[in-house]
Image (cartoon, rainbow, N blue to C red; front, side, top):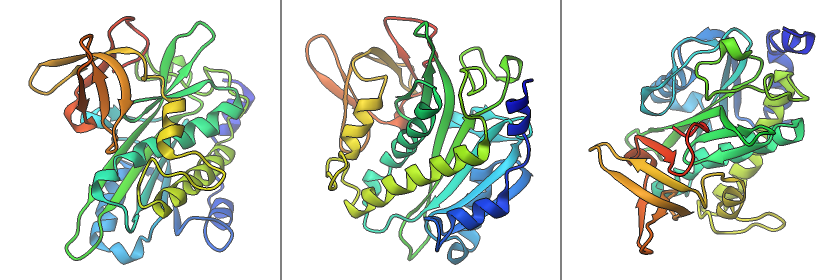
Length: 297
């Protein structure tokens, strides 16, 4: 392993990150670090349920190693010590309808793309909650997974625990599948997880604040910034592709990925021009129908 990769695996500078990222200097309500845990999302769901007042909006938990993290459909995500960024946020977006909360996963994906692209990684969103890196040969592999979990408590507005996992310094042998990649493998100019975490947090929180100010309306523009729906569409590799969505009952929806509706569902248009919306909760797999093996799953 090269020196930058080794240095990236040193423990995060938690005290400096807390000082720079929490109020009054930064946008976070709380910053916590741990050496190891099973799942940052599971920890925050439990904590935000047991003591919600202790975990205000934009509370963050990050760890050096996650042993039993999970993505969509309970898919495992395990990381070597210091080899990745495992970030979970408690979000309490007041005034945002529950139907709009699905956009938070894509808001995180936008922030990941905005963090990785300046580092030299050609990052794109794959609906509904992955970020893919496209190499010089046009092959797309998963570099980041995102998982949002709803927390409902009586008498309180809904909260969301949003987990984002970015593969940083894993070499090919440490990656979980052949369709996975990391910043190291992609030749990123930045492997310092302190820098990456700060860039992600600042990008995500800026977009989140605009989203909340817009009442969760992904079509509403703010001064000097595009609407979230427009920004997502500009970064989404899925749109325009011929796709096949596999549903829980074993049936399929095939056609062109033609857009995203107001609730964040993917619109699939068949050759006759009929469109159907499929939500993330309804899709077991989404694959490209015209090309195989580029990391769609």
